[in-house]
Length: 224
Image (cartoon, rainbow, N blue to C red; front, top):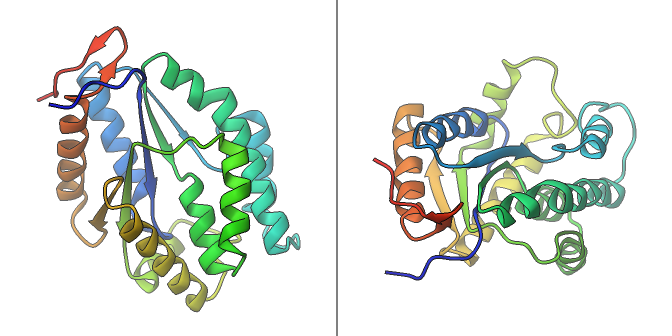
């Protein structure tokens, strides 16, 4: 058995529009609560007062022109604040952190999607996060056309949802390339499967991981 780590567990959810991240995060949080595992849930961009203001600009004001590089830098500013104010303190307390999107989204959306230089993105991301990487990333994979159709039922589209299908296809390819490059961290999930099936697969993986991770004051047993 692996030795338990000396901090909490950092879990992120990634995927294209309409992949079902919100549903699966809610299901995971229910299981963590039921298992009495200390945790927080947060999101990108957002999670802090500054992040919420940035979210308004980069996502919810789609008619405001924002070029790819400023877009990425705004996401990075939100990320830096979130890491420093929320994520690192929670991990230091030994808690599980569940985050809706993280740096992989910028590499997929602004890198593969918008065409920004991957090396530049990696350098700025490292500076913004202090090199903090998730321990476990669930990538909910889905055909972009299906995901956008799902997203359209939620109301007015945000800036990213308004981009054309070819952009979203590049984003999907970017996510899959990231997962291929880090198979130990990523778990690629079929976003067409039922929410119940996905929730059980995700919980099984998290419960197994918790069995080797020190959570809070002691080492957590894998919850049933």
